[in-house]
Length: 125
Image (cartoon, rainbow, N blue to C red; front, top):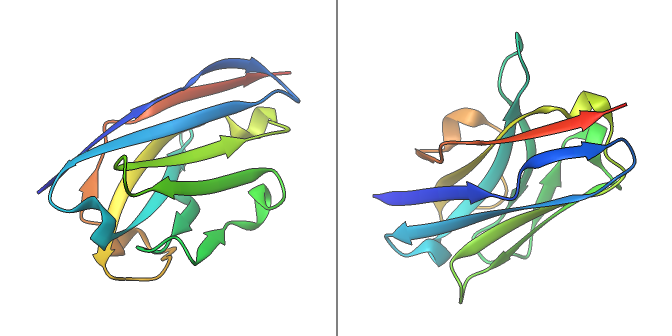
């Protein structure tokens, strides 16, 4: 089992920045690919960014490329999502997830077995 707890969400004006963090406990965090997903009201959950187990590979959905950066610190068992130039359409509940062991970044929700409870990000116009 891997337990995940997100933090860092909040209310920000358009153009602003937020940094989300996800703290992991349980099984060896450094073995797992990690991802950030989001779900806006009335919409399906979607991938935002993913990072390989060793941090050498990343994936970003097109709408956040150039604005968001995913990173991980395996020594601290954390994965982060730096979000810059935020837009109202980024408003959603953001979820951290742990995926395959020794895997590359994966955009498929089905590849992730462990999920956090989510943190709300609201971007005002």
